[in-house]
Amino acid sequence: MKESAVGRGAMTGSGPNGDGAVGARWLEYRRGWEAVDSEVIEEALVTIYVNGRELATIMCTPRDQVALALGFLKNEGRLERLEDVALTHVSRDGCCVDVWLRHTIEQPRRVIITSGCGGGVTFDDPSLALPPLTEDMRSTPERLTELLNQLHYPGSLAARTRGVHAAGLSDGERLLARVEDVGRHNTIDKLLGECLLRGLETRGRALLATGRVSSEMLRKGALMGCPIIASRNSPTSLSVAMAEAWNVTLVGYVRRDSMRVYAHPERLGQAEAGPPTMLAERRAADRG
Picture 1: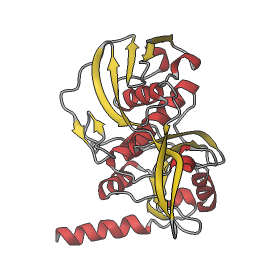
Picture 2 (picture 1 turned 135 degrees about the vertical axis):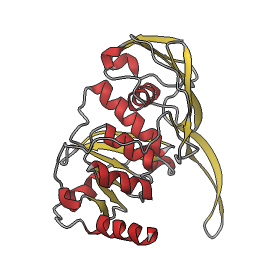
Picture 3 (picture 1 turned 180 degrees about the horizontal axis):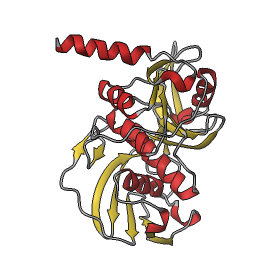
């Protein structure tokens, strides 16, 4: 086992290679058969232990495991500051992460299997009410599209293996942090953990993602204090309702020349909140 004290360099352990991809060979047909040697995204079970007790096991890409564990703990309300962490270590195979805190935590009384890839895990109801965000930031549709395009870059896991989700944090002008994982919900935890390790403030920043924005992802973003959450994919009905109530600008299907804004479009320069109003009217009609 490799043990480490608190510190950026000491808290970024991973498995033997820590790369997130493994070599693979497949047969490819393009008007004829051809053997291809390349890579596929790595997927494994990673178990998080806190103060010597098992807390959760997550199906993920086994790299940046400490960031994943710390982000998960913070999103679940078990950790507030990096200073609360006394020690971490990652097993040699990268599949166990030990986090020793300077305080005790309660074991969860229930575990909720979310709609995340492979069944995400949370200990709190994702739809539990949060106060509306007071943090504000502004951007434009054009700039938001440019920032999302930067999530997958040449040499990234996505470029090498496909089938990889990414998440990033932006101040509206540039990407401040970026992570990748086979699970879309894992990327949000990894991103928060990365920001915690680097001392990056998440409040008042934009959360960018590539996967479907479900309720647990919307809640994680709101807890991070991100007033803009944008993705290349779709939101769910519950995440739209939560974004409306919590004053979050929710953007989906970001493409080169188009996007869909489901809640609070004023942060992107549009004063009329058309889509949420239409959604509310449709719900009223359904109830009637």
